[in-house]
Picture (cartoon, helix red, strand yellow):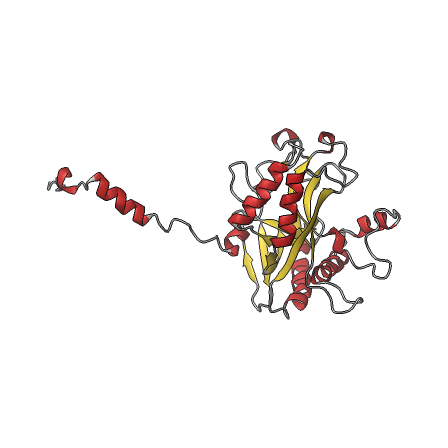
Length: 310
């Protein structure tokens, strides 16, 4: 049997100083480009490992939509992955809050940045036999809105507040956003409103809940919280938001008043966000189970990415 010939280790070694210099050159370009949106579509939601709800494993959170065999959790949304600088600013904002019980939504417990979103639908639950029809309906209608656009949809942060979920079991710390692409006439709607109304219309057709309609009705009877204008009941602009953190209602008794205790450092960071940050969306996404369908803004192609467990 022939023996494998190895070179002499002394001949193969480089001087440490020389090798360190080479390594330094090779690591100059360690800043990797961001992951493509198609990769994020593959991992749009966490993998379910249990059919039961155990709040003790999730900081006291309770599952709003129970897992039922044959049901498909569905969501329509605009997704945004903050840049490193934007992520750092949002992190500083969370750390500056006086309430230390706020859990971050901008990164995992291992400090891996997470994509954020603006919702265009309520949490929907489709049966297996109706999910394909729903997807066909929603994509056809949404493409009629975004297909003619030539630029991404852009919004700016406008304020910070608390936003309760459907049963007030959890409160989200949110950046309220405003649509800088204002309509040309008072009777027109912003792009976000057009997308929301389209999504709500298809949801109603499939006997699914609509986003913000009940909230707007409740607030319209309360003059201090009335936000939708009397002239245009389809304007839900004050409700669009990006969630960046969450807390349980028992940890802060002042959540219901929708006001945050603004310390100077919080206000300083928030003012910087509102003045300098522009959030850009280049696709509308529809997630059904682990499958994400992306409708590019102004594009003719529809990308569909399947999860690992479809």
